[in-house]
Image 1 (spheres, rainbow, N blue to C red):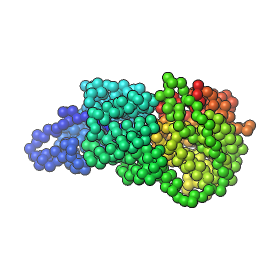
Image 2: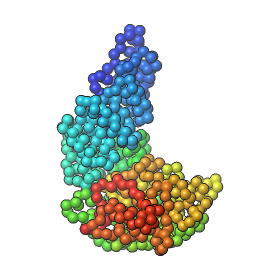
Image 3: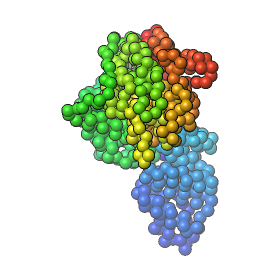
Image 4: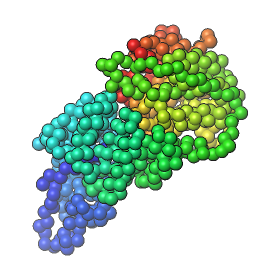
Length: 573
């Protein structure tokens, strides 16, 4: 992903009039106000000029702007925002709004970034660069229609803008238009074959189309180009290009079954210095994928002492939609469909839950009937639960749709979500999170643009500030408190990846009931609706939500968070 830089003539020079500061001008001025200066030299020179306390107004704004550019080169976006804000206070300008908006974008604060780009466009004149950068922010928010409109405007203003073609293509890919995406990104490669970024984006398209050899070839060339000449544009986060290229090539190698080369690439990802949100997410994914591959190498592998997970072969997968919408549902239309289904109820140290094993059996049966290969685990201790999840994450690398279902106790600690194995025991002085399964790790391991991920959690949204105290009634939390964290920004550096939906049995801070019958209200409704032919997955969850709310008389209302790319059908029309 590329941000573009804008420096109007107004900010291209600093006026120096006082003869007594000639030495300062000679020593510090060129270093501070030259885009090619090294970051530390630029910051140091601008800091010394500011310390002279000679300049004010527009001239001082210029110095703060250039120091912000220096901070941007270093990936220190908090300092970029601070200096850009001071420059705007002194003298608002299009260039400074663009710079600050780009810093907010790199921090993952897309709404604020869009507000800054809007201000830049209002100041005028209209700039293709600003349209491009605002398009990036809309794309990261999942608003692909607005993103494409902004890239259209950027291309109209600058027909040779390779990055606008690249990012418009990526937006089309997000909407399921793989052929349109390939056309746009190939045009970006044609416009400037020396750029590594379009090759990385095209590799994602090749992998989505199943052409792993071309995906590996494009990322290999991108790595060569990035090593031969580091990106010179100061708006490109340091190290981000190589981190992205190695991540995508690692995923391609893993999909090919070449674990040795995949491990090498993931290790290279972790060697990079990540400063922006995208690079941190890539590193979180690489860390999980590398650990999974290394674990698979360990032999002999011991089977955890717990009830065995049950697997079943999947029947032929049904078509996902009629031809008119097939491009928008490629994740569910073909390829492997895998699902780990876990139901934990026989807890040894916290409140026992009668129904999760029943719920897991019901959901596993429903998923098998619609074409999923299911790994079913009941009353799993931590070792068995980790093994089941790790096996699934390895399989997910070669799958196009993945569903994770968990019923049992669930908790939040410091903004991170955890699933609770049946042998979890909270001891004074110990790290309570060590006894549980971190949802962030599952999210990072699944983060991939070309696969649809659906995570379904029939667990309470509770925070165990005193975990040894079980709930008074049969609910799926350990202690009432604030709800599970919404997965918009996760502690590991991962994010709610493109093509991911998380469905919770209840709203934040609320109780998920275990139910008076054989199943919980949520899982009973889910098992009835998940196999409905021709029902888009979010419409299916709406029906589940309505049924649960009616059954519980409003005491429980399911909730979801989605970044799905287009429509997803689990069963043919």
